[in-house]
Amino acid sequence: MATKKSMPHKIPTGKAVAKRSVSSKKAAWLRSDYTIRFFCADDIRIDGDGKPMLIGFYSDNVIVVNAPKDVKPTRESPLGLASLTFMFTISAPTGKHRAEISFELGGQLKGGVQVKEFEIAKQKTSYNVIAKAQPFPVLAFGKQPIHIEVDGHKFTEEIEIRPLHPD
Image (cartoon, rainbow, N blue to C red):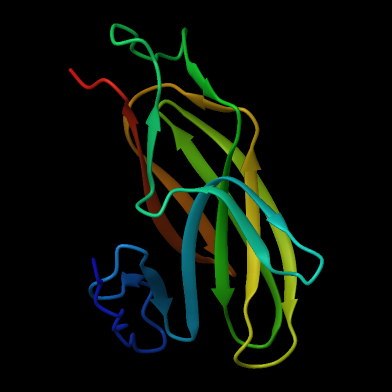
């Protein structure tokens, strides 16, 4: 199945909003001269040449959990994924930058705050910020927001966690 190529919206400098590209499920977030792409996998490793290897890649950001049909995760009795890793590919102006990644677990608990400082040395380059939750507790099925803040600009992406055996 072919997908349409993403056609990003241009956002005027100074607007404090983030928008998705038009027709891409693997969307890019844009804010003036910042572009951020989100990826989710069981694990993401960097090979010897600096390229990311996505292991157990979730192309649609939907994670299906194999749990018994009658089990519903809660804060008191969560399900656990061995690992869940998020990668944000950031294109930004040259210079030093700071990124903070956080996520919510079942809308009940904030977790996984990770801060990365990085530098983009020349234009038309990007930087991968990787955050791993090992293990990743599942407190509820449904959509879970993943947040990244880069240089004070906030962006949010969602993953969805579903049971293998829906009701």
